[in-house]
Length: 323
Image (cartoon, rainbow, N blue to C red):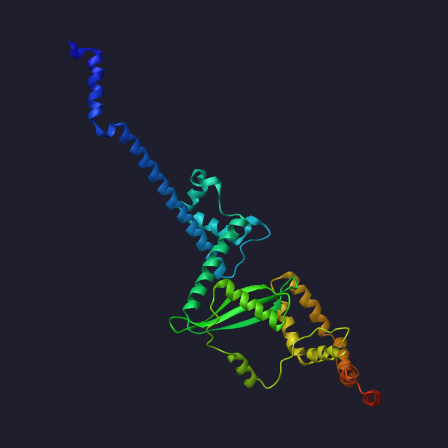
């Protein structure tokens, strides 16, 4: 009779529930904890998959030398590749649609995110080059400088080395602005780059191989376009001769730059090209070259610190006669 009472029935039900381990409070808490951990691990795995896909898109654009962005942000190559991935990959598409799977609602499509992807991959590639370079027994350095689009002198440091498979590799190590192109400043810049990258230069194994090759194989000097100065008239002679001797090469380079992808570079190259190929410019160039070739000897004589007045008068007289 007592067993049929509500109190006994309720107590019996609680006893039966207590006998089931899965009903214990600590077990229930553990189950909840396991579920939360499992859910977090799933989200972590999903996020890693998405980030890995975005890194692959970054590497693809870099390998193909394609720009990441355009004037319209949504039309950039990076964003369009992600759109393509979403179209054919349901996991990626759902990740972007479900905001709960993305911490702080991030999309990794912003300019800052793209720059971070580029920076991370660039550092990884750079570290790989340094690692292979340190393992190499032989490596050499080439340095060159050229103005960029903003007319700043940029120095490029290039290394050549033999890898572990005995294959020669050439890699760009650094590009940065240089204030002066004197030999000392270039050498100091190189040493700073090596010190920053942790490269050991104390064990020198190679010497000026390229310099020896060029000095023995080239029959004539290659002139480069020079700036003229107001203080030394001989610099005008060097500038004119450099343009005259390298005229064909200058025209060829300008013609190539006229097809450059950069609008400003293309415009500047086109303006200079049209002026240089004009009949008027070439006639003036020939006339000035002939004239300055005659006066250059007089200029050098008059600028000599140990000037001999008699020699100067004689040189001046002969120059006037030639003119």
